[in-house]
Image 1: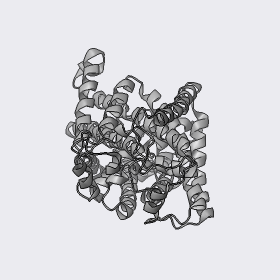
Image 2: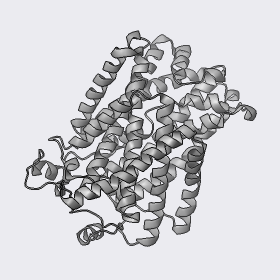
Image 3: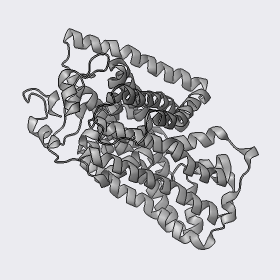
Image 4: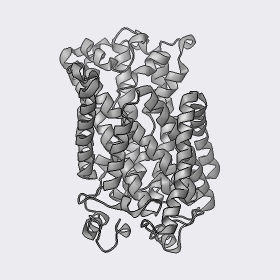
Length: 473
């Protein structure tokens, strides 16, 4: 990514960027699978509400059918577009190339803000699991200091490099999934298949049910902002997305199958943390403690993956000339310095929000961004069909439009059912993005800050000649 540096006057010397570009310290397929896993899921924690909202049969069907309607189309679009633009910035570059730099910037603002809001949730949830053992963490100054200390420690891991984050995600993923494997084996003699088909259509909380499915199965596109750090992205990214889809679906469906089938149904008890209760019923206190430790570790993994995506997105935007060049400065570990600092600051500022407020706000902004992504994907297929696509979804124009209709309808539904408060807050955030763009363009025109022009797109989204040559080479 050496285009954003000039003469070695920034912190990162040229050789660090050259090392990254030559293939050293690139992310291989196994860490990439677990990075995607933590971007999307992080484990079965949080899916319990689907049983409370819809009952056993709807919960099980939801985590089988929803991936077909939503997760697979989003993963396929990410695979094609991520290999078409194998660089940091991901979906920001897709939208810029399709609709121009203004909409590309809005995409970047909405998705970055959505990611930071999402990341503010994980230190809070981590402490929620610890407060039963350490009551002082329930509130007040001790909790504030704990959030600060935890955020600093996790941010430092992110600073040390994406390969460190990737292999940390692998270790955390194994630790997170093992107690569910043990619980599944213990549950086999107690399984009653009749419990799986219980349904009460007259007592379904559709809002909670759909939100639970949506929150646990989105963010497949986040890995695209790290495409420039992936080893051989044209082959590795599609494979990693495929394996991650399988891992995510199994890690939701199998624990639900075991938990529902092995214990007497009480829908009111199926809420966050109930898997730990089931673990105690089936295996004893030791398995419950392991499950709670795994839940805490899962939040660490999700924080690391999300911060990587958010910070490298800002670096990619700087490489495209959409943000000042200072956002493209890398540390000696190859990580985006200012991007990490901005993301960590946003987490600390937003960590006082409630769980419900965080989920609602991030979902609203995320939906707007995804609608732009699907539109950009279809537009580029129609208008620029000759652009090189190392991976291409084996469907024609009509096929990809039909593929994108169900997830787009779902996005519109989520936007329409949001509360008035969420709409006002989210639309205000979008308006701020509309105001930020002319301000940044003014900085560029007046020369008050340096911007990269090497890989910039023109105002209408067309590549400049040197960029066109790069895409077609």
